[in-house]
Image 1 (tube, rainbow, N blue to C red):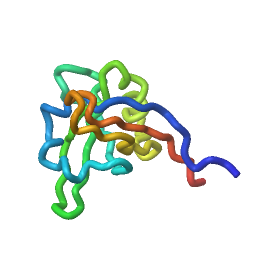
Image 2 (spheres, rainbow, N blue to C red):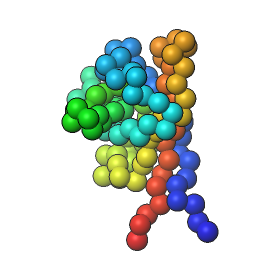
Image 3 (tube, one colour):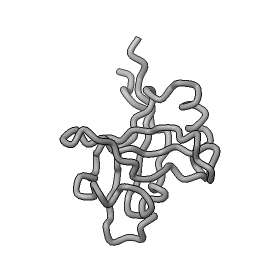
Image 4 (cartoon, helix red, strand yellow):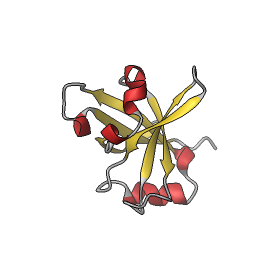
Length: 115
């Protein structure tokens, strides 16, 4: 039996303090599915990958932070090539007592092609 998903990377959520994470903090739990989006207009990082929480109750999206610039180049390249649907990003740890740059830990996996 083949695996449905393969590990790609994990990292802390960067920039959490400067974005919308506080607005949806109570909804950010281990296992929460997040969306990865390229931020082509980011003036600080040409490879910026935003991490988005989609609130289905409010029908609204919140940028809760970014993949750290030290970890985003390869992922940004895949997203630029149109492979965003190949990735799944979930929260793998939440620690509200940690420094804000270490409060949320993410795991990104590659989903199996459904051919």
